[in-house]
Image (tube, rainbow, N blue to C red; front, side, top):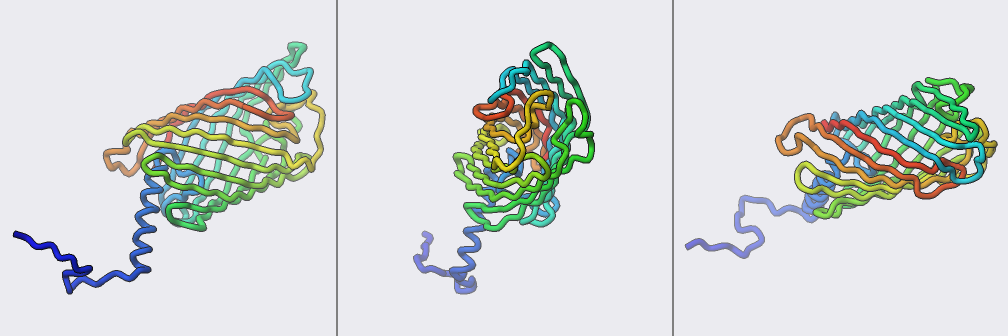
Length: 296
């Protein structure tokens, strides 16, 4: 018959952990659970990649709009096909480098039936995310720069506004394990030259259904600071007006192929549906995205 001791430390050779050490261990475990809850759906949001680890997504997307929030009597239809590469890489466990490269193929038709087209590389975005608080609730901050070096803003249908942006955000994420995770973001984007600055916000929820399948939904919003020059919408790229408000809903289904076999590189597929749900001086449309993902 075995006897189980009720003593706090029935093996005198084992040290009794201090309260601080025990607390650190609890926070470490909570952080690992939190990271595991969101790792299938990218390392975006408040979470940072481990040093040397990261995430890539190569995607193709389509967007179409036949309506416009606001006054644009000469508009009939807008179509856009985008090819993008998004990346994240852990510089340190608490610092992640991230960025987006985008190639666009655009077509815009006015009410007279005149169609304008353009294609090429659009704005490049590069940023850093710094984790400030670790634990069950993750708090981070990020800084991003957008540069317009790969296209001509004087094109008949330009691929962007042709100016540099600077954005700072605060990001909060919390695991709801085993019921997924939630993320909240708020930021301010300084837009040089004529466009208005912008308030940025995002609400995200994601959940896994087993080792491979996961779901994610977002509300991604932009609110103009109304401190720029609101120009006429006649003859401009209506997907990149100088001053606008816009809210987008997204729903994503993803599958991680290698999640259960311990592979160093974990590949996956994602399919996203998106729809503009409210706005002002902006296109009102919807689209899709299909992406190949890699977590390492």
